Image 1 (cartoon, one colour):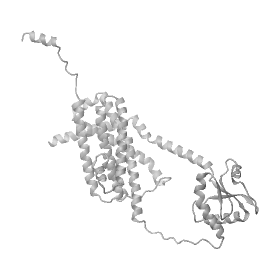
Image 2 (cartoon, one colour; image 1 turned 180 degrees about the vertical axis):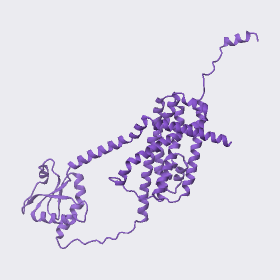
Image 3 (cartoon, one colour; image 1 turned 120 degrees about the vertical axis):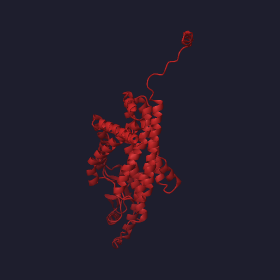
Image 4 (spheres, helix red, strand yellow; image 1 turned 90 degrees about the vertical axis):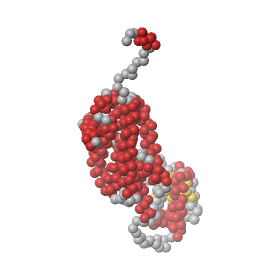
Length: 410
């Protein structure tokens, strides 16, 4: 029994080493590494173009066409409030009206030159100011303009009262909210990596079926060992790719330019990263074992391409289900997501960010490992019964041949 088990594990190791070496030292692995860089380059170019365009646009400003004393009072009040009140509109003096002089603000706004930052005109007395401009912009400025006008009528009777600030340690509710943000980000990253990397398993199996390599392997080792070896090899290739990407992206993460900051998870960053690698491995193995079975049953690459869309939709449904379960902590839907094999890695990784208990992770890892073994056993058995049939089926004898056979002497 022990020798049989050792031969089984040795067969897995041989197949995994063969597939891993064949992919790692091939030209396709270079394109595999460069694949995720194209979206990053596109996003960077789009962001640069957007920043360039937004840089050419000036901030919208409020033009003032009021009596001279009202203009001075409004500008002074605006300058006082701008020090403490955010989003105070910038103002430009357009006209200083003489006593009794009126102005048509609509005509004045239409005479503003193209490209001018002035998008609205403020007119009338301070007690009843009038805003003229585009609906969306003046709606946003209604409150700030009323506040500035009230401050202008109050006059410079004294500086605004200063507010004493006493910062406390982050509240528990704020910490929980930030940790949920970390959990959501980890789920999204796990989903993107799994979706990007797991699809390679299907095409790999189809290629070896077409080259009759799978028949040679199945004749030499158990079919279960073939499935295990291929999955472990593809997981090793994926982890190698993650290591290379992490090596190149780590300087960006250290500098932190433009990267959001996340709250520390409940289990701490070292253990959270460890759980991230564990749950990525099981998410890959669970989905990869299904894809390996589908790829084994598919006859051509075209069938694999046809099945890629349902496989992608399956991943999306699992991700949305796990994201929904994250917002229902402690409810039955969360336990359903933990027990369901495909969503279990997602919800457990998110749970490590918001809950510091460790024992659920050990149980979840054992459960996910059992599910991987169960899916591989079922997939290999189905593959062996439906695909591995050597030689053509025996031809049925015609009625005339059977009659002739009976007449022949024994």
